[in-house]
Image (cartoon, rainbow, N blue to C red):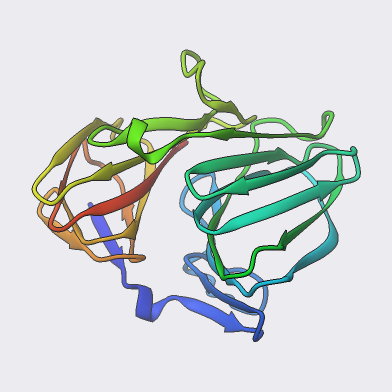
Length: 232
């Protein structure tokens, strides 16, 4: 089963400095029928204007993955971590028992991110933050796990959730396959380009909520970049 969520129909907000689209209920957008997809709780498509961003604010008991599509985001938190994550790189914050952080676009041009929140398997614990480069050239034509709480995904950034986050870039006509457990909750969004997933067309920045599929065959209808979450 593949439920398409067209980008044009997503909830959202325009704050001037921030243009946000929400794949699931978030902030002032609330739809009781669209709160989560398994352990996947938030998928925000954010465009942040230059020299603006989110001032320090708290989080707890959430795994927060930031996938940078364009530009760069600069992070600072109450643990003393500081870092700049640019397109092709990923950052992960395990909020644990509680952390405060800020996220700013200090670049001269717009920054575009996906921010993904996944519910952790345990509450509390020491908060952590980390980032890692995953150059797009290294994941061309194949799905690469960029964050994971599943045993065996040793090269990925660690999260405290029964989930993994994968990404790939595909040239037009290329395909990638993913072996899925039918009981899992999969969610796929092309950051750029149109794709076909098991015969269903998914355009850039549309969402596809997937259940009861044993295998995903993803074919690029044009040059594409996509992110996939596989969650409990």
